[in-house]
Every structure is written in C-alpha cells, then in structure tokens.
Length: 577
Image (tube, rainbow, N blue to C red):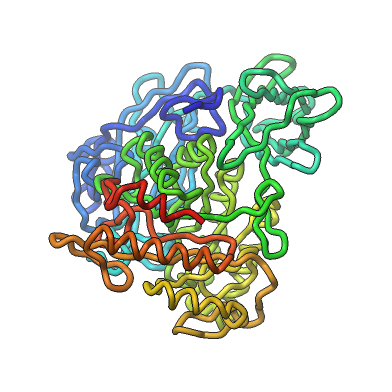
C-alpha cells in the first residue's frame, strides 16, 4: 500500500496534517451522570475507567453496559506546549458536549457526527491540567441518530445506541497565525486545481504557498496573499511549460498528487500543512453517470460501519482497510456508508486504494422546525469536513423519508429536502446529490429505488416497466417515487438498496429480508440471480444490502467479525456483469 507524503499513522485528519500533535486516545476517568457529582467530575475524581474513543456501550471501552445513560463524564490530565497555541480536537461526540479545563467551561458542541475544536491555550496552566468532558444524550427520535435505537431494546434494524466520545480526541500545537481551512476543487476541463483557503489573522504580509508534487517530483508552485478572510488561487497541472503526463484518479488507478501548504508572516514560516488531492470528475449527464467522462456502473455495498466489539467505532486503523479490501475482493467498486459519517481515515484509505464512497446524513426520525435547523447545520459541517476526498462521489441527504415521513404530500418537508439539495450543490458543484434515497424524491441528481424482492424473476419483471415507476405508479406495494410537484427528469436510475438475503445457521437468530437461506449453494444461487436481474435491467448501478451482519440483522455477506459466510471468490464470480 502506497501512502501519500503527509501520511502519519493514527492521524485523525488525513487531508490537513500537521506534525506537532498528541493523541489523547486511551484510558480516561469516567462516570455515569446519575452516580457522579459535577464537583467530582471537574476535579477529575471519577470512579470508573474507560478506553477512549470507544463508547461505554461497547466491549472495547472496558465497560460494556448497553443501558441508556443520559449523562456521562470523562476526565484526564493534559499539558500544553510553551510558545504554541494548543487546539483540542474532537472527531465525534454524541450528542451534546460541554468541555472544561481546570473546572472552567471552554465551549459546547451539539451533534454526533461532525468534528469540532477549541483553542484551550488561555485556560492552561504551566502544570498538568484537568480536561473534563460532559456528554448529554437522549433517546429522542428527533435527534440526528441514524441507526441508534431510541427504545430500551433493539428492534428491527435499529441497534444499541452510542453515547459520548466515539471518535478520536487529540491535541494540536500551532503558531498564532495559521491556516484554518482548505477547499480543493479539481477541474478536468483544463487540468487545473483551485485552492480556497483561510487563515485566522489575514493581513497584507501573510502569504500562503502551495507546492504540488507527484510521486516525489515537484510539479507546480503557486502562492497568494491572505489579505481577506477567504482567499483562492488556481494551479495549472498541464501546459506548455509542464511536459509530464497528467494522471487521473479512478478505481483501477487511484493516482494522487501531494500538496504542501506553507503560511508565511513577513517572510517567516509560521505554519505548514500536508495534504493531497486527485484529478477526477464524477458527474451526471442525461441518464448516465460519468466517471472522468466515461459511463460508470456503480457496484456498491451497503455499509453501516458497525463492529462486534466496538459498535460504530473502528477497532483499529487496519480494520478500516480490511473492509475496503474485502469489498473489492468480492467485486464491488464502492460502498454507500449508510446512516453514519465514517472515521475520516476510511475516506483516506478509499482514496489511496481506489474505492468510491457515498456519504449519507444519519437520519432523525421526527420532523420539526428545530430539527430542520439542526439537520442543516450538522449536514453542512459534514459536507465541508469531507469535501476534499476524491473517493467521495455522492451525497445522500435523507433515506427512505426518515425524519420527513409525510414528504409525499407535505410541502414543508419536500421543501426541506430540496433546500438541502440546493444548499449542498451551492457548496459542492462537483458531486451528485440525492435528496431522499429510495423513496419519494424531491430534487435529486440520481433517481434511486429500494426493493427487497427475493424472487429475481419478479424483481426483473417489475422494473421492465421502469416508466410506470418513474411516473409514480405504486406497483408491488412500493412507496411512491416522487413527492407531489416533482417528477422524473431523465436522470440516471439506480437500485440503491436490494438483496438483504438472510443467511441463517441453525444456532443463529436474527432477521433479514424474505425467507432466509441456510446453505452456501442456496445463498450463492439467490445472490447471483438477484445481481443478474439488476444487471440485465441496464440501470446505472446498484447497492447490495449488505457487507456485514449488524447485531440482530443477519443479511451480510460477511459475519460481524468479517469472516466470509461463503468463499469470497464465489461472491466475486457472481458479481460480474
């Protein structure tokens, strides 16, 4: 595996890398709210221990209590660095977080899936400091929660909840003047790349330089003054003066360009950030998905990103790599990350291994004006956070009308879906956006369907009449295809959820779709026939449910521990068009 130049093992933010940082994962003091006073928590006198970043519900946390606790406390000692600003970074905390240093409140954050940071320099003393985090979570279906249950017991396809810190926590040491954001936009029309950037204290003597290289060879250098809050500069990657061959990113050839961004104040270097990017284009034209200008057939797996021993948190960096390698070995060229914003290192490995990813907002399950505001804020934080990854090819805002149950006839709900479609497109003009995957669409760049019919012949015959479905025919008890006021506009069509066949052994209990199968040949026969039925419809692709079993759901191609249910090569053989 070939890493980019800025790669650092374990670094949580792989496209915005600084060398001076400290990992805070590991053992913290911990306490449940009902048995902990605020005074005990703020003084670091918590009675339990927990392994961060695993939530207390998981085995790897060292606790493994799956009951709901609405308040949890964390604490540990930290130190700053003299002469530097100290930034405290959280990759993901569910749901309301309040952060304290030495008993003083530093800041708050609401939401489960986006990263956030605080400059804690002015709260630190010269000695060891007590970092305390309070997390409040509720079993409210109004929260953005994805597949986390909101009842005491798991049910259907909703699983044990995740509470508190569930992604990496880390410190970063920086100068007073530094780069604060970087947006990278490639353009295949003229083989160029645009850098939109910001520094925290722009002035006429602050310069930002961008050094581009490919496989260790310098390609191009451009720079711009940071006179305003936001700046931008473009670099040509092909011209009369640049005689090398331009390399494009794809699933078979994931070529990446290295990038070094340096900030100068009055000619003195004050910050350096490592990054990378790719030249690639994933667009919709008429009824086709085009990848670098050529038709692309998406063979996706639904991936909910759960692990048996650690819930939503990957047990290791290598575990992220393994999931991608297993999916590719089974003949798939991407995943739809379902109801989860994955660890950013997953996108990194998808970038370097050549693997496409759909990024989907975890749903709330109850709609109100307040939830609409929360959804919008958290979604745009996620879009900004993951925008630069070339492997990320499609945004999904809502799934199956969850959180917008009446979208078919409720104008406010269809307006919300459409407004988030346009808001996403305003920030990201590169990628397709799906407003409501699989069910009643508002504005969408790809028309997607969900159908768990287990009889391949019935599935094929149902969709021979594609026109009926796109016009809103409720055939076979399926939801309407479009909300009122919307219609099919000739966009690509994908079966973005199907399959879901339960492979149930004698000692196993759980559920999947349709009648379960109990043997390798029966399973492979059904899988192969369902894949062929979709392939023969000549759509733009599919997403098969799913890569692994998840808790009570047993319809994965792999068990929860990633052991294949049937030989990988037999899956791959039947997964060829």
